[in-house]
Figure 1 (tube, helix red, strand yellow):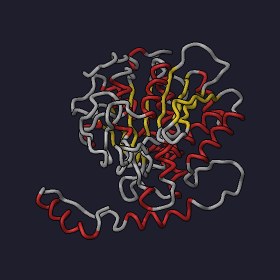
Figure 2 (cartoon, one colour):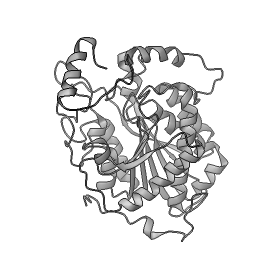
Figure 3 (cartoon, helix red, strand yellow):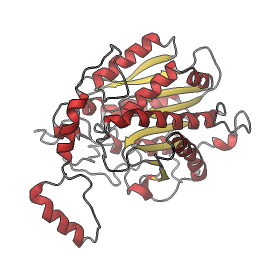
Figure 4 (cartoon, one colour):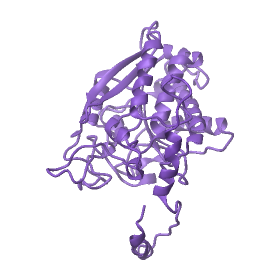
Length: 377
């Protein structure tokens, strides 16, 4: 991403700072352009979704509509907000409508960063599994799922504009200032917990935090709906890339109070993925701050610290850096399949049902000692 005329200057700066470095991709924009023809190929069926190619927001909208019509009452849509460019930000609720009583609530967020295309691929695959796979429907008797296929509809659709630079867009499409020279807010720096730490106040920055916390329609709408739902037991936001399972905090290196339980449940995910992939996909587990550097305003920190969600994670999907945000389409199927298996194991564990159930008690209290709101310990 370093322009040719800046290469030597950047090299000198890295050396002066004592930072070892290597070039992973010689020409990132050329790599983007080489992938574009694959995305434009025609589908052989009328079904709006598959997991062999990347799909834009319009395809995902059509897919949700079809799932809604064919789910037999398992799926219900909510609109968290209408974006600045007029797109609905949809939240999909999936559960077994024939069972009543308390259920474990699971919130899955995807696509908050526009260029991370594998993230919406995972969320849509999870919706498909929940609605169509009998082995998944059995867990719906004890769980209630809320899935956000694309948390950044405007930015995500812009990344499909067809040119190399739009493909690597990260933020939403907010017009900043009078002239709008620099667009967008990083929605994963806009949530209201320790807002501003490790984020930028420069509207031209990729990590621009916005003028205020919850300044954006997307984050404001999502937090309203999350509050309405009530006690959420498991929160996951999917990002790429890095193959890491991250837990709070992002704004400090101090570990959260229930770090042992966070690591235990994260291990359910990583062990399952490793097994399904025959050892080819290996994840690291750790705190966001210690592993990735301090940054606040992220959804997982807010869910944990403000809502009191006891198990809150960011999962950085494959790969480990060679392709980065440009994960090839031939990696989609294996990634979504492995990820879904890992998520199923986490859900099975917290609901104490299915293949990864703890089997200790029906409602193991040790697993869900909910942190108090604004719990910053």
